Length: 134
Ligand SMILES: [Zn+2]
Image 1 (cartoon, protein in one colour):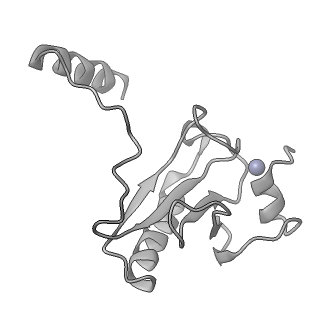
Image 2 (image 1 turned 90 degrees about the vertical axis):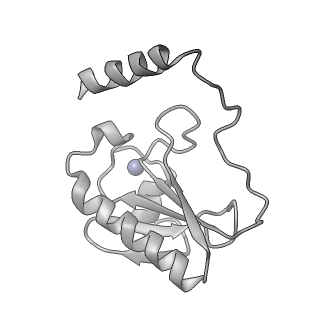
């Protein structure tokens, strides 16, 4: 079994500010938050990426509940919910970031730099390539 940081938190071997824990997922504060109240939701089962997660439904129900709770509990205007898979993934254990957002909080988006499609045809070709893979 991989001894990554999140498996250690799940096993209770590493301290964390636990927000919620059940048989499916453990949610705790990111130690280096984008904004205070930034929660990581991790599946209890060790998987590295979204593609590896067998039963996505129950896990994303927890993500949804945390996103609601962050908004309500912190009186946030909204949330940013995101996941890195392999690239820019700091810990090789699937985790969803739930970040509280407020108007004028200064966050201009994670997905810089943005680009544009050269044409509608090019855009459609990307849509088709992804669609065919479903
Ligand atoms: Zn793990």
